[in-house]
Structures are given as structure tokens and as C-alpha cells.
Length: 214
Ligand SMILES: N[C@@H](CCC(=O)N[C@@H](CS)C(=O)NCC(=O)O)C(=O)O
Picture (cartoon, rainbow, N blue to C red):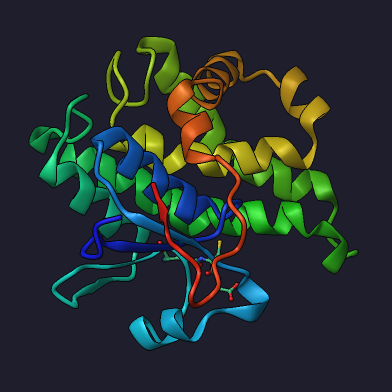
């Protein structure tokens, strides 16, 4: 294996790490993947990025990208074979991602961890998430197959891991929700070969172990 590959610290189920891996796979970039156990983070990760969230990308020149979106853009700026990055879509993309990473993520966490707040009915957090994010996305997807156009873009790949996490909280509820375009969109992406390759299971990395070429 070349020893000058960028190193991607990742955690398989983390939606931020999934979006980074989707962009790496979609761009055809090659990285050394280190699967991390969040409760036992390797010292190498903490040394590279003291805040030690995943994903983290350590480049051969020593620079470090600590935000999933920066990793997505790094991969796609180098090579964007499917035109996921279009400059004229930047503002709309950022608006959608800000809504996703802010208010929607908060509502999603309240829904996912509803038992932590027994005073709040589960349906109220779920309804918040639908009203502020999922219903508007469903309306967009009535007009085109993906969030910005008829082909996938950075926005789809950045957001789909979070919608998938929402769906998994109560799969039966999601399947029967009046969100048909969103369901088709999510199923299409998550059933793709690209998504499967981004979700491949790897054993946790340990110092001294060979990196996985991803
Ligand atoms: N803003 C960061 C958020 C990353 C993040 O919060 N990742 C979670 C896992 S899904 C994490 O590493 N949490 C730290 C921990 O659990 O110790 C990004 O976009 O990369």
C-alpha cells in the first residue's frame, strides 16, 4: 500500500462519516480508512484532531480536515466524475445542509432518544422533524428525482444519512408516512452500489495494523 495516502478516521454508522465516505467513493479518491471505536479513540486520531469527532481526514502534507463537509468538498474538488458539485448550486446546497445539520439534527436526536425526556411525546419530536425538513424535501422531490435536480448532488449525499437515521427509528412509521417522494429517494440512494461500498464493514483499526485502502 502506498504510505502517503490521506488517512480517513471514520465510524461506520456515524451519518457525518457516511457522507464523507460517500463523497470519497463517489469521487474515486483513495484513502487509508481507520475504523474507530468512539469509546476508545486511538491516540493517533486525538493527536491529529484534539476534538476527536469523526470523520477526520489527515492529508500527507500534515494538514487535517475535521468537518465532514470539508472532506466531501476536498474529495469532489479533486475529482467529480458525476458532477455532484456545481458552483451555481452552492447557496441552495448550503441552505439545505445548514437546516439538516442544525434544526433537523436536533429534532432527530430528540426523536431518537425520546426516552430521555418522558415529558415530551415521541410524536411531537417526529412531527417537528417532518415539518421542518422531511415534508419540504418531499415537496422538492415531487419536482425532480434528487434534491436539486434530476441527478444526485453533494446535497443528496450530505443529507441522506440523516434521513436514513430518522427512518430507522421507526421503520414501519416511515414506510407508511405520507412522504412518497422522500421514501423513493432514500431507498434509491441507500440501495445503490455506491452506498453499499461506503457502508462496507471493517474491523476497528489498531496501531500497527495495516490500513484499509478505501
Ligand atoms: N460537525 C462534525 C460533526 C461530527 C460528529 O459529531 N461526529 C460524531 C459521531 S456521529 C462524533 O464523533 N462524536 C464524538 C464522540 O461520540 O465521541 C462533522 O461534520 O464532521
